[in-house]
Image 1 (cartoon, rainbow, N blue to C red):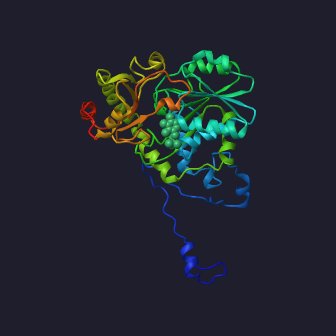
Image 2: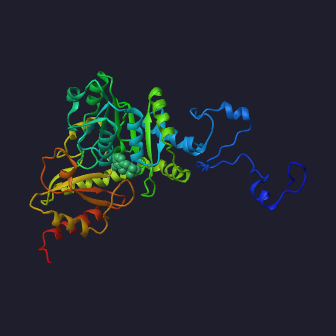
Image 3: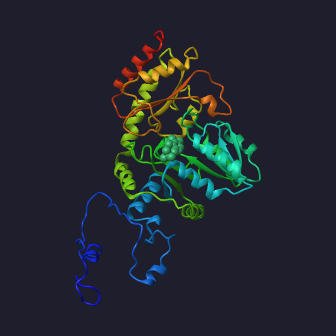
Length: 398
Ligand SMILES: *Cc1c(COP(=O)(O)O)cnc(C)c1O
């Protein structure tokens, strides 16, 4: 290679600039991983003409590459939405929605069973940013109309609450909200975006923790915000840019790689989880099985009406005769189930929650333990739970 005036170029320049371009026409199934901060323009005019808001071209890595555009388009399609924005975690997707739609003086309604960091964020917005935050009974349904004030801008919903599993009446909440011009956001993570058609049920914005089923590997943190509405999307897109949210393309690739098996995995989690939940409901140690497909679960009838599946996450309430010491021992004596947060991966998990400390209102007694049913064989998981339950009643030696 020669320099611009025809001299041979130096070794460092040679390492940076090279003339080889791979031949065009490569074709394969995987989406290419395009890493870039800088995006190149063929001319100053092209640079000036392009807008980061248009996803028909490229301007800067933070605003997207072919890899992230493809993931966004596929996620929007899965949920029947039109627009999607990626965020570095499920929680940052929640933050994006709040910061895009709320300003000081506004009011937001949040279900009492909401994902705890969503609550933490809302409390922070209330204490430090002048946004009024009120909590409602997740089973409120159409009566939410009574809580809507003139400054209420947003109603959060979660279907079901990911610890206590109440299934809310989303269509009723949406109808009441829209009647008064209020937007509804749904944390739709539990359904993986495939077992609950958020937009058909009336939701304005669906949020996903892709960390769960879409990634499926317990190895990625990512979130998505999806909508059908172009105006809402424009508002979200500005907040997304102002907050500087972006995701790594290797991570985007990992999610893309696992999307083809999303429904197969979800259905397999669902089948095992229902088998195990049914079995648990016959055990004397368990007072209630909080699984939307079982009648003990608040909102079971709504689940039957509105959902097409259930996935792998559910909780149980132990009989109140068992102390936390005993239920902790149950969790620790499981062998296949590991102790850890999150879900949607291949491995089964089990976590106890001090639910009465998480809620304004909690009337149930007995320790709550949450299961994530992975992709192991259901009979092995049942045998594991069975031996741990049997060990729970043995006298405590120490
Ligand atoms: C995990 C989870 C989130 C947050 O996702 P992260 O990627 O871990 O931040 C939000 N909502 C629900 C219901 C979740 O389970």
